[in-house]
Structures are given as structure tokens and as C-alpha cells.
Length: 252
Image (cartoon, rainbow, N blue to C red):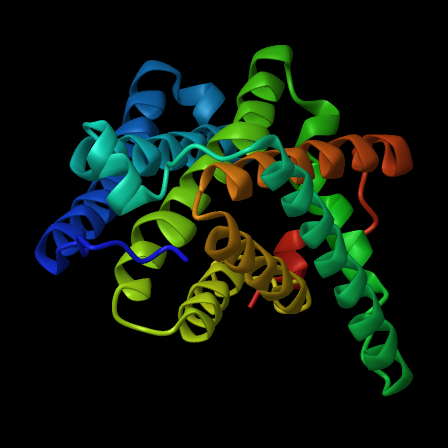
């Protein structure tokens, strides 16, 4: 169970979420403005500017959450779920996460029988791993930014937000099933690509169950990092970071 005698305070959670959103917007705008001022020709190419802006946004989300509700050990445990966990918890988390992918694969297979182009979801996954093909032609510096964002910043920021502060606040007020479902739906919807959303929701359900079972956000963070590293490597091995589909074309 993740409930504690001390409940996360709604005002502090609201303050953290508002400040986090504001910090994310400010970081994106400041990064884009700075790049256009210092390197106008370089930043004119959105395939170069966008990954840097997105990395800044994710970094701002993680930093804002840690500053507002994670400044001491007690707060990190209460508001973000950053509590110690045994090694067996990580093994359990990896197994459940893999089961979510298996369930997703079965679901997409069934959907394919009804004419849904569900087989493309794996091509979408490889496109995500290639940052929509940007990694194939990125300079070493830009590739480093993309990889750090994909394999570290995004998992940390997303888990601190959905399985951390939002999960902790909701769980103190709702049953586990509702909390897991609500945070999973939010996690799925932020990925925006319609075909990919069901798989993201399945992963979100697994991450929420792991958070509930282990009582810690460290496990979802670790397994999310592992997942993203594997997706990047598989995209490289299978497509050379030249995906067969474009995420821009798959968007809403």
C-alpha cells in the first residue's frame, strides 16, 4: 500500500503542478529564444531546435517537482514516492512491464483482425526510438541531447509527475484501481500519437500497479529508463534510425 498516516496536502500539490507547468513553458520559450539569438542559422532548422527545447522542458519538469515537493527525504517519500525498495522490486517491475507489452501486442493483433492498421504500432515505436529519424543525421552533440532526453530526462520527469506527485495525491483520496487508471490514462494521452496511445496506457497501468505494489517510484523510473534505452537500441538495429513511418504524419 502507498497510503500513509500523513496525506499529501492538496495546496502543495497544486502549487507544485502549477509551478512545474510554468517552469516547463518558461524553459521551452527561453531555450528557443536563446538558440535563435545566439545561433539563428542553426536554430532555423526545427529538426535541430525541437530536440533541445523538448530536453529543456523535461529537465524543467523534473527540477521543478524536486524543488517544490522533494527538498527533503520525508517530502520526497510522501509527495514523490521516492522510497527505498528491495532489488526484488525491480525484477518484479521489469516482469510486469514486459507483461504490459505482451498484453498490448495481443490487443493490437486482435484489433488487426477488425481492419485496424495495428501492425504499424511497432513502426511508430521505432520512430519514437529514432526521435522521428533525427538521430540518423544528428551531430554528436545533438545526438547526445536526444539520447539523454529519451533515456533519462523523459522517464524521470514522466514518472515523477504521474507515478510520483499525482499518484500520491490521488491515492490518498481514491482506491488503488481508480488511481492507477486515472494516472495511466493521463500518461497515455500525453503521447498524442493515436495508434500508440493504447500501448502507452497499458504501460501506464503496469507502472501504476508497480508503484502500488512496491510503494516506490524508483521502480517505474528504472524500468522506464530501461524500456527507452531498449527502444532506442532496437530502432537502431532494425531501422538504422531511419523509421518507415513519420510521427508527424501519425499525430492527432
